[in-house]
Length: 338
Image (cartoon, rainbow, N blue to C red; front, side, top):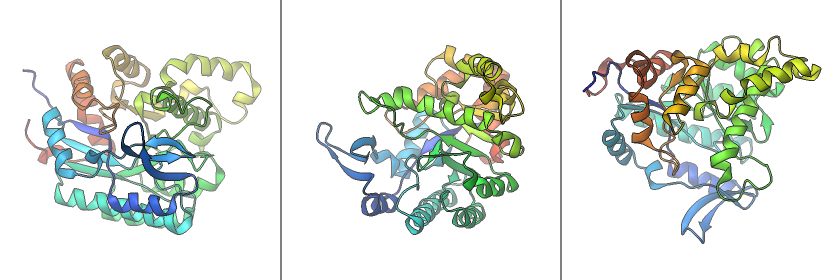
């Protein structure tokens, strides 16, 4: 077989805990409710009555997660809280939900330090509390921050969040940007939110950050976009064309959208060798990292890693673990031998 230089580090991996689920059961209403979907027999988190997220058993059981990682050949996971994260319930509940999940992840890292790292969730809507929780989470071992593409319906570029972004950048913590539910009509059917809308949500958030001047205002911020950057790679030239054609598209950003690509990183949650190659072509081999989206139903833990392992040697080593180790400050010398 081919020698693998870097351990595999999955940067897009989700976990939950019962205490977080209990909080959303108690305080998520009226928008978020937890109930069984009759046609599936499964318990779902619903948003405005539409199923949003299915808390699979694999999201709660660390031993089960380790077994799945071993079966797929995954050495380490950087775990995070999926949507709706902690953006619900009001000030105190949001802060409590962040503490609960961050403490849960910190305990897992302490128990399995060679297998898990984690991203902090923050009560972003309440900047003072978010900054306090960020300090606490970093002290507890967080190697980055998790954020959704919108925060309770507000864009990431909202001026109210500027103090939080500034503190994240000051601490030099990378930020993983994951899509959340899309309000587009029809997306509640056929799981179109997962297959299509999430990608558009990511591209929309990214384009806003470019055109709003956000990336100019936060030059030290390191962003990782989920799902290969969504639809962003295929829209690069269209965004540039619109930047040239419409004055409002260039009213705030100092450069064309494509000029900001070097500021962004993405994961490898794409589902063909061609799509992965295109993602690497668009963002660069040093800015793409192995990710799986496990354990959501759409995830393909072994298949996503296998696509990475089919890349040419030096590119493969960077994507499967080298880039993530560098970005998140992970010492892989103690990783399990392959």
